[in-house]
Every structure is written in C-alpha cells, then in structure tokens.
Image (cartoon, rainbow, N blue to C red; front, top):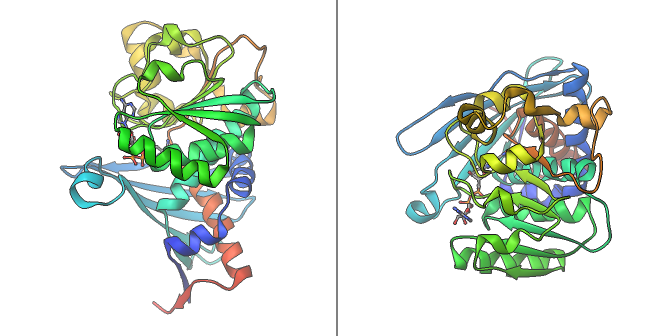
Length: 325
Ligand SMILES: NC(=O)c1ccc[n+]([C@@H]2O[C@H](COP(=O)([O-])OP(=O)(O)OC[C@H]3O[C@@H](n4cnc5c(N)ncnc54)[C@H](O)[C@@H]3O)[C@@H](O)[C@H]2O)c1
C-alpha cells in the first residue's frame, strides 16, 4: 500500500523547527559521506524548468525522488504557484514506494529550513535583530518563518516589485509569526537589516553590494542557473561565501559563477559547504564585522530528510489515504 499525502496533510504535520533539525542532520550526512546525492537532472520545456531530484540518506534511511517544476508565469497565467513538486518516498530495504506526497509546501519549508540552519551558524546573535526579505512569494514567507526560528527578531522588512504581493506577505506573516513587518517601497530600504534573505524570481541583482553594512548575514535562495543571480559581484567579493554544495554552486549558481567569469573573484573565494560549518571543520562566523553569504541551490537531501519526517509524522497521526497501485 502507498500512502498518499495531499498538500493539506503535509501542512498539518510539518513545522519549521523540526524541519530545520532534520535538514541539519542531512547536511551532516552529506559531509560525513553517508548521503548519495547525484546532481539533479534538468529539462527545459518552453515555458519553464523541470527538475528530477533523487537522494538517499543512509543514517536516516531516507530514499526519495522529487519532481519539481519552476514556471515563472504560472501565477499570472494559470493562478498556480511558480514552483510545483511531488515527492516519491521509497523503503530503502526493498525499494518499494511507501508514500507519494505533495511537494510544494514541503519544498518551501525545507528551503526555509536550510536558510534557518545557515543563519543559526553564520548570523550574529543579538536580541532584537531585524530581517530584510527580498521577494514576497511562497519561498519568501518560509524564509521569514525560518529566520524567526533561528534568531530573536524584533521586526522584518519586505520588498517586492509587486506592492500587492508585499502587502499580502505582511498581513499573512504578521498573523502567523506575530512580529512587526514593514513593507518598503525601495530595495535599498532593506539594507540596514542584520539578516537579508533574497527569495525573488529576479535574474538580476536586487541591490548594490557596496551598500550592505558590515556584520550582515545573507541567505541567497532565489536564482539557480549559471546566468541568473540576485547578488552582485561586489557583495560576493566583500563576503565570506558558503554554499549548500560546492558542486551545485559551480554548476548552477550565477551568484558565484558570474563574478568568477567577470574576474571579480576566483574559485578559491568559495569558502566551504554548510555541512562543513555544521561539523566544525570550517569556521562559522569569525567576528561581528564580516559579511557572510549562504547560497542555497536546493538539494535533494533536504527533500528526502523532510519527506521522511512528514511520512513518520503522518503515520503517527494516522492521516493520509492508503491506496494499492
Ligand atoms: N534554493 C532553493 O532551494 C529554491 C527552492 C524553491 C524555489 N527557489 C527559487 O526561489 C524563487 C522564488 O520562488 P517562489 O516560489 O517564492 O516564487 P513566487 O513567484 O511565489 O515569488 C517570487 C516573488 O519575487 C518577486 N520579484 C521578482 N523580481 C523582484 C525584484 N527585482 N525585487 C523584489 N521582488 C521581486 C515577484 O514579484 C514575486 O512576488 C524562484 O526563483 C525559485 O526558482 C529556490
């Protein structure tokens, strides 16, 4: 029997705190060599991108493959989210499929979760910190949720080219997280924040890297193709750069690939992987002045770990529909 979990089922069992815990474990498995993570396969139909993302985490016994699509015009054309995904979870002992679940919400939470883990290790730690969120879409909301789990935030700023999206974001996230959210009208208005998350669909830099204040931590999650970036060469040059995976950053992340092509930095500028920082083989924040960047491309280990968590919690709560295929 295969357990089918709808988006509502996933929402009812998945929270950011627990997701951050399993995602942190997944990155440790990656650096410890107990994760199988082939580079994702991408196919480009005319209007979007289809990605096939398999992973196996031996420690967690999580074997999964996510099929995810990114279609930028979906919200305006079809009233559908930009990112749509389904996850297939298998029993690693016999290969049988145990669960098929909606992956849209799962993707957003696990993407927030990895930024949350990076922020836990790399951001300054003070009371009453502020966050600045670029983009006000699905991913941006989860970024802010994760920031509130990682740090004590007094307020957050949001900027989106769509004022309507920013307003919706402010209302919804204020209700969910009970923190003050200030909707801004200019991208520079976010640059005083202690933690910045870029979670937009933009393919070009969102702000001038010269204007970022010392001590800022940045999570860059939006762009993931060699010719697209949310961060300019100057902020990459000024910051210590940590990526989710070296391989993914050098094959998918315009944020670091473009500055290398331009000659602003060399490949040695890539400081380390998040798993190395978690394990302690690479430094976390060194002082209160440095600027740190975490670049997330999105790894299948995040999906596998989160899908396993969702499946276990669904079994415990007795939710979902069992079908024989
Ligand atoms: N790193 C990962 O693991 C990961 C996972 C999922 C999605 N993503 C990426 O995250 C991005 C956002 O995805 P989403 O699902 O939230 O999309 P979305 O369409 O729901 O939201 C994107 C928002 O960005 C805004 N935007 C576009 N250009 C902007 C600009 N210059 N300044 C400010 N805001 C701007 C749009 O108006 C929109 O509100 C996409 O590029 C997607 O591919 C990354």
